[in-house]
Length: 174
Ligand SMILES: [Zn+2]
Image (cartoon, rainbow, N blue to C red; front, side):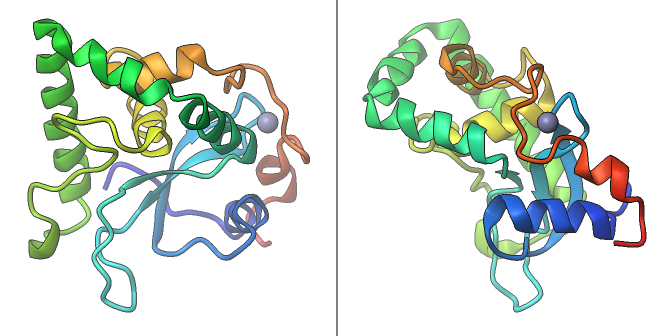
C-alpha cells in the first residue's frame, strides 16, 4: 500500500472540501503546498460493495471549480485533439495502464477491470479525473491531465484553501 492511512484530521478536511464524508478513502494522493489534500485515493470497492473506478478523486474546491470552468469553456475537444499526436496518444495509454496498476494495489474488482477514469485510454471525458491523476502521479505521466492543469488558474503551488494547512494543524486525533 503506497499511502499511509488517512488521519481523522484529513478526513475532516476532505469532508469540508466535498460537503459530505469522503467514501472509501485509502490515502491522500496529492496535497496543496499548505498540506491540505487535493486528491484522495479511493478504494476500488466501497464499503457498500459499489465498484469505484476513479481511484484518484479530485477534492479541492478551487481545483474542481477550475476544471469545471475548463469543461464549460469547451476545453475538452481541444485537449482531445492533442491525442492526434502519436507520442501523446501513446503516453495517454501508458497513463491509463499506470492508473490501473496503482489501483490494483488496493484490490482487484472484476466489474471495473480495464476501466480507469476520465476517458482514458482514448478519450477525454472528465478533466476532474484526469487532473486528479496528473496531480497524484506528478508531471509527465498523464499528458491530458498535465495540459488541463497548465490551462488552469488553480495550482497546488499557491494555496487558496479556506483553511490553509488544516490537516497539519489539527493533528491526528480529530
Ligand atoms: Zn492550501
